[in-house]
Length: 622
Image (cartoon, rainbow, N blue to C red):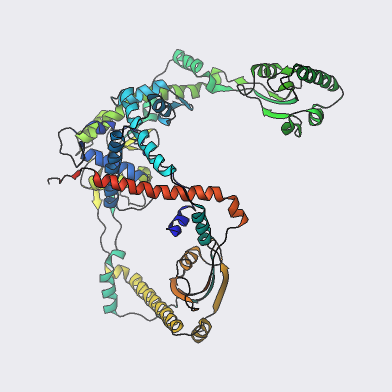
């Protein structure tokens, strides 16, 4: 268990936040979660039925997290279905327990979502537009968010309540800081030049045909909903552009840059102390006639943190200091020093050390930029509406893109053939290739609408498909011969390594065996887990080998990077101790170990809930 925990605490712990229902699947096709129509459900959890579209949507979400990675589609579909069921089991449990999240908490969370933000701030119009395009009310949406948040709340309650004892921390460091004394010999991969016979070549080819296949290829056609294209069709008058410019003028404004320094004369609540601080400030103001501001700040300022930098407070930001301070700092000219300004901290002398005036770009200078922004803003609502319709039309007409193309006013675009790993044009997108080779598309159905970036949706279907096929032996004969020779070289290395291992088990020393095989013995003393003496994979294997027993070394054979073998002799295992640097990290390590324990506990809780739940997988009729 501690070994497993040690491995887990080496990386950054993923936060336990659910993929929020109806938010992180991009808001497209959200109506799938509102009900399944009259079709037969695929799976039921209690009274909740999930339909094929729900399962497909869950798969699309799951597959997006694996973008750029190779994965088995059937395995991922199974995992996506399991997650759909698991999330529903948890949701029903927290509802049965009457766990709640307030409306205010949910609304505050919604306002942090990028979907509803413009220029980094929550935009109510965009929020209402997006929800309206999905036929969903704000109350309905907030209710979904509340469900997701309460599920997260439950998970955090389990994970965050876990703890670790001092004994467990000590045991962790004993394993983490363990060192090992190792001897090893490298058995190289010796090239084999002997040519195999025709029968051997043919037999090897028959056994390994999967290695000699053409790549599977597909060609597709697709329709595309592009925000840029919609924006280009928007016509704008001069009056509309000027009005938009005025509305968005802040986007074309460079804020004033004002850097300030201060000298602080602090006081307590006592009236006499107040007067004394004021008199000191007035005297300092007089001294500035003959002294440098930075030098005087270093000498007399009660703000010791800034005093050593000449009183430098950096860039001036409104809303940080008290109003009297801000008013004075805002009205000073470059190089000017204020009269004493009273704040809760004391009296300040303020100086502006850098001043770059703000600037507003005139309409004529940014007209092209304004035009583009206006067109895009006007096109967004139409884009959201069309996106909803595109999802419905492509689903209702799964055998053709004609209806989708008619909706978008375009003919379907055809691509050349491409493979799972590589394509040109739109097929250069990993998401497009994954969809093109998905089971549903290869069976002849339209894909789900696919988001490409934030401003484009694509629906595709297969035009042609070339399955992988075996190449003829005559075309790959040279490759087969090379593979046979390589395999024989590996077998020779394995045989030599096994012989060495057997002789060591019989009582010979590694030095004796190595001399007979004309191999060099190498030693590493006090090898640590993070050492660079050996390849990381080899070091990892060394620390998995059992400890030496009864004075005899532990021996193992592992793969070498070049294809050969390493025969390892673990002569001694040195128990780790907690170093001074470890003690400084003890709190963080304890938190990570406790988190790992908590996640294991959460997994056990979820498994128990799923075991008790009423789950029914419905057999689909063909």
